[in-house]
Image (cartoon, rainbow, N blue to C red; front, side):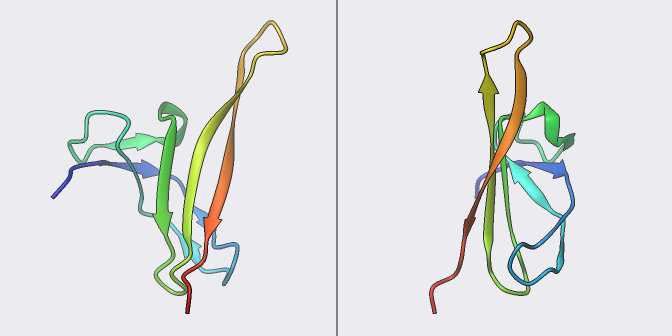
Length: 80
């Protein structure tokens, strides 16, 4: 079984509106540590209610002098 770190992040499921937490990442030490979402390049989770899978990954904007990071969300619905 693979190891991961927990990500401190909460959001409403975009499909069923349940409150989501328990996001994971494999970007860091993978020792079940709890980390802030800003310290990772990507993180992911799944809604227990509707099985929607959510993946966030960091996008970089290099057009300005200061590099800013934003996250893009991908949503994957369970096929029935």
